[in-house]
Amino acid sequence: MKSRILIAGGYGVIGTNIARNIRKIYKDVELILAGRNPENGESLAQELGGARTIYLDLTNPQSLEAIRFDQFDLIVAALKDPFDILSRAAIEHNIAHIGLSEMADEIVPILFKGLQSSLKRPIVLLAHQDAGVITLIAKKAADKFSQINSIEIAGVYDDLDLLGPMNQSDYEDSSGLTERTLLLENGKWIWVDPAMYVRKVQITKDLVLNGFPVSLLDVPSLAAITNAASIRWDYVQGDSIGTIAGDNPSHDTYIDIEGTLQDGDTAKHRIVVSDPKGQAHLVGIGVLVGIERIFGLGGQEPAAGGLHLPETLVNPDAAISRLEQFGVKISTHSIK
Image 1 (cartoon, helix red, strand yellow):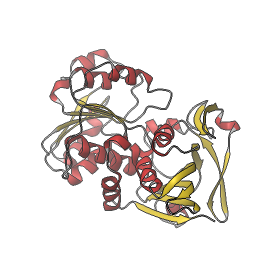
Image 2 (spheres, rainbow, N blue to C red):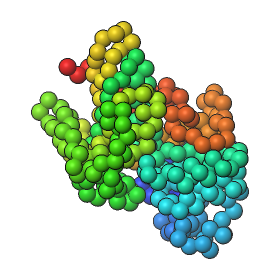
Image 3 (cartoon, rainbow, N blue to C red):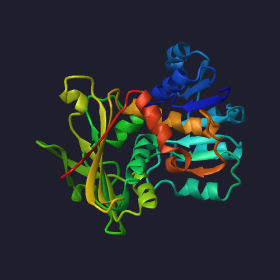
């Protein structure tokens, strides 16, 4: 893989994990770690090899003018880009782009820009939970069902798990990510106040925690994939599997799918996804599998130009294989 990837926010917590995961598999890709304090990324660049840092400040037009975006093959935005500066630069210079920060009510500008442009490279909306891996795992699990009544997902956030500023600001209070949240209930899309729509999430037999719905892109993605009647994704704060076991904090997600199986029986399955290295590590894997699909690595065809979601870009089996290779634990059991 001989490509040049710009990682905006490349030496932050999320960006560092993305860069390290890429380097673990691909030794010859050139990595450019961009941010407002490039000197802070020098040690990481030396550790990675074949990497360098540059100055990038999305609030400073002069820093943008100094960057030759057309020299890159891909931009990964591992930071908030509220004005879609990096995605618009990618579209204008015909390079690929991965965005990680848009919520359900924030994607309209890039959707309209993309739909009204002749996109020659993939523009990937990867702001789903953990860069799309949860949606991909849920998509695979849904194949066992002929009809799905509900999908309820809960991500457990451990205070001891290290998050970057982008993620920490998202989860700064117990009401979730936004003042209003989009979810699907009995076939109807509704906006709700998270604080007024709390769900009791059964984590274990003896542990029940409050879940606050959030407007992640996983919800409309899974609605399109599965035609489920009800879908919600909840933020839950509590000790992770790793912390409870006395180990390092893990990042855990619980996917509950209820419906009719292919054999006609009704059932509720729970899929538990746990990364013992934490959320930033899991996001880094999600970005890695997206990059592999964009460039057509591992025997895959390069992705066509256009707007992409994780489920339209990545094969779930390829993603699950990478996740297991990086130590992520995925288990499934029936709920009575």
